[in-house]
Image (tube, rainbow, N blue to C red; front, side):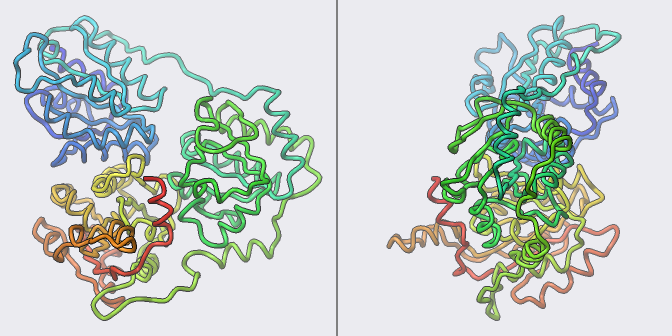
Length: 548
């Protein structure tokens, strides 16, 4: 069997069921073999979109994301998506065709391994026909165990060789989560017993560990409130004690209660500047405990009084076991009155001065109306830009697997690909792609992808005809901003041009057709060109620019 066929077959046998990519001469054969093994293949129009689709797929399903590129320019095109996946620690396998060893003058030849490692991914390689299957299994295992993107280079000369696949694949031994040390647990329990206003702040590590249940039980035993980092949004959805996202997107009440906490228990959360508002959100007198399975993550962004190295879920379960046998004397700050405040004081109920005019809609009003029109069982994928806080704050989702927030690298243009990956992962949900006009234009090729794949996406473009973040940041400084302002784009017409529906929205009542569209089964994709008021400044914007 040719190596290219054997690699595709091996991946199918290892459980790969979906893959994304853009095919050329270097990766067609291996992809055909993967599809022959039972996998589905979804073609993107740009390689960075393929990587981001696989990234989102992995975030939603918890399984390995798989994508593929041609050698040379196919891989260079994928770099932004790969950097995002690397910074977000997404388990992902990129099958990257590579030039033959002797093709030193090939137009396609570059240092592919050097390039992928430069953006934080791992590089693996098919070294020979004899080792090709073992090389493939190793790459898959590293991606899954280390929770990082791995680019497996597929040299053309090795792909063309012959090999004999083994009768049985050995994927590697099972790994058990690491339990924290008894001393660390005892120290943490002591701090819990001394707390009156504890807060459990969960990050993506808690999501990956599937730790909602033990963390909720820990909250019940300690009277703790819950909050999450942005990427873990939805982890405590439905809990009466959930404050939502901590950081720049926190509601006024959430920020108040987080700041009042005397003990912050960070489970799988990096406590970076976004989650802590550059450290100002956590009280100066608060005790900060960080639990992470990687020692290097503890204290990397924020002061920490106690670091606990261990699996988030195992640590929470160990604490629950101790507290069930020796309960705390106090029950934290949970009261019916506080539960009612949390229920009624969300972003949706916060008063604001509606800046809508007859020609443009306030982005807050737009987001609130979308929340009312759309079913609660939905997924939301958000691009980067000035607008991005509005869908994050006003569009609640049912769980962390319904939220794709590609902000690890802070690139615009990834949101639509993220929505496509999420929709393929969970076709039972209505998926919303929330984009700015700049990011939408950067991702324009994938409008065709969304239409071709018949995913029924709702693509909402918050269209202020500008790079709004730069306008609002630099204009008050006296800088000219005409270079980041543009003529208006008709996104509804662009949607119709590729086979989706198109709706232009200038007033609240213009959104009426969205409700009827959402009830259709099946439904075509719909592009909503929302002409938003360009003068409304996001509350979190200056906080964001402090991190640039």
